[in-house]
Amino acid sequence: MKLPYAKLEKHSRPVRCVHAEYGCTMLFCSVRCRQAGWSRFHFAGCPGAMMSDQRDAYDEFIHHDWEYRGVDYSDTVFLAFRFVCMAVTNIRLHRQSLELAYRPIAQLIKAPLSFFHFTYLFYKEEADSTEKKGRGEKQVEKLRLIRWEAFRKFRATHMSTTENDTTDEFLATGMTLLGRILRFTQEECTLFTVARWSELLGAVLLNGQERSPPSNYDRLKELVQRLPCGESTMDAFEQEVQMAGKELQHLLQSSRGQGVYTVGCLFNHSCEPNLQVVYSESGDETLSVVALRNIELGEELCISYIDESLSYPERQQELYEHYLFVCQCPKCEREAAAWEPIEPCKEALSSAYTFSQLY
Image (cartoon, rainbow, N blue to C red; front, side, top):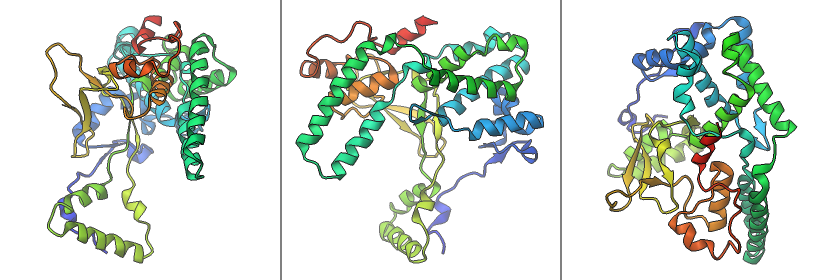
């Protein structure tokens, strides 16, 4: 069974780490990328260059269950680990001071992990389940109103709450494993504290973007479908796959993770954005923005962090729980009167950047 027009999809073979034979599974897009990665973060984080006890701690770190408040934080934790490796590489390889080594990371907007809540994710699952059960629209709307009132009460008080034992245990576990993996010196221990680890996880949540690029098969299918009779060709191939007892889903599998785009994370949010984020079709995950309309001279450039077609309560909850601000964009200002009988709590911050002033 051969893929139709397989040569249309050209992708370079990944380059393995120079320490692959000693257990490092990191892949790079080119030799040049590998050299840049070593100089930037992989010097400190390469398991193939570690001692056996460090590799054991690394494996434990990678396979640990990083669930917190019902949410899987494994991608967030690993990207935060990458940032720690960047700082350690700057200190040990490039001989920088602690302050200089951490400066690029310190510029990211940040907040303690305990500030984040993702109950809106569970509400989405509950709403989907409710609709599947065939409950009436009135029942669904009633549940939405109950959730909105519960969120408004939470928003009015949650900034004053303190971290609980679960948070402390989650952070302590991370710091213990980091210490075993990277063997912090006494001086480095003054930089990499539990509080720093907490805010670093928060920085990833505020600045990171989840990415799951199209699989090679997805890209090939899109190219073939542009050809005459391309759609029928791919339909026939997929039918052949199913008749052979194979899982078509295996062809659609791709990588998944988080990344921080140094320019992309600088854009503020609006539920009526004038820019749209797009990613390159070549599969290298390059981020670009395109204008959605004519933009006036001096007008702020904004993207949308969420699905702006959501209702006002859904947008407000997702932005507050994930990005820690009350949205007051023109769209939300117009819709607020129908949902906000009183002014939002004064303790609720109007924009996330205020958190950077806490540190």
